[in-house]
Image (cartoon, rainbow, N blue to C red; front, side):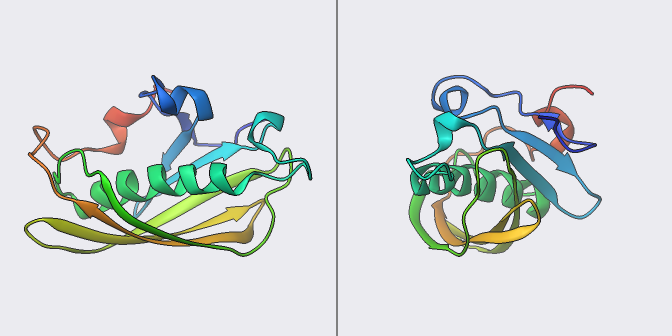
Length: 149
């Protein structure tokens, strides 16, 4: 199955991201969109993306996209809290796409939320809190996070 136009493969596919990916991203001028194609290895016995896969995706796309959009170097940003609402299934073969919103940053925490769709239908709503850690050496940009087209 193809990947939607404009999406590029996420560069950091080592360790756990490699096991669940590949993930893809696209800068649309205002937001960093991230997505993946649902494969059988992501599915539960009902041939829909397992809730754990969708939770993993939210735990990855929300902090990555939020920090790019906020132009903030908040460090590695480990997850403190992640709340999810599963709204509709993401069926085998569907394209799941996430969009995040940076809400607020303090000295030790930052807050963000995100929505994900499966083939354009809302499937997940998430809110999250992340720990601000030592800066990683600059504000991340979409250009450095994804492979060349």
